[in-house]
Length: 390
Image 1 (cartoon, rainbow, N blue to C red):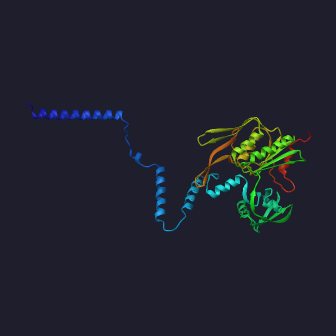
Image 2 (cartoon, helix red, strand yellow):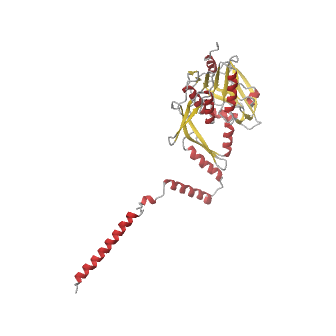
Image 3 (cartoon, rainbow, N blue to C red):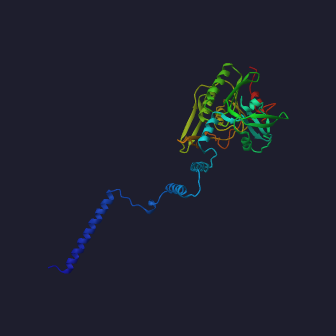
């Protein structure tokens, strides 16, 4: 007969054995399963989830509870615009459908206004270009005229002057300018201006070809190639490529222009956020004409790429003033409702890897004095670099 003590020991032993079997089974399960121990912080929502949730809550509260009427589409536009504005990048922006349409017109040199291009310097607002056939050209305005007043008002900033010149088609604007020391008044009827991105002519007693590219648009390369090919057939002494006041435009079109001018080799390369590099190369087709490129402080983006490519390849001289310094490329994403974002996604560099953004391209011959009317000193310097004795 077993004693009570023996029975107690047996029960405890059986219980311990059962516990041991249970722990062994648990250990085996943990080793052979994908069980993960989840910490408290892993259960908390991410910052992104919090932001999305907060946006939904605010949006629902406004829609369901806000007392007054409001334009929700306008509100959404403001939110999207703020997202891009807060990147602190002057080139990244949100555009509604109307703004996108205007950008597309600008790229293709189509706009409403007077057809005047001007810069601001110590002399005032100097007209640097008058679009052929545009309202200002028809009225008699010329390059070199210095704007004094628009509709009787004097302006101090470029932005205010631009706004004053804008307006609806068919509306008259009075322009007072100084030309050769005399005051002249012009009545200009604003209209739709279809600018030509490329102008060409022969200068210096028809010994030189001159091509001005105002902007790199969709039709620019074909116009440029046609003009250059005509000059090459005439066996002229050289070519002056005028990129002054060219704000850029389509980067790939700028690459095509540089390719047409330069020998085989690298023209430029781009780098994106992931440090991925893309090279842009020239083929072996090039011009045999001696080349001089005119640049100034308003030469920007794709125009700077072309100027830098010429300089790096030692294929021509740059004359004028240091360029603007925009070495960034934007991509446009268009949404189904016609709105879009322009987002800076790449930076470009000339073949030698010298930084352009925020720095610019320096001319080989610095001639900063824009003196239109009687003489264009930068153009005169460019002409002087050619030898007409041959």
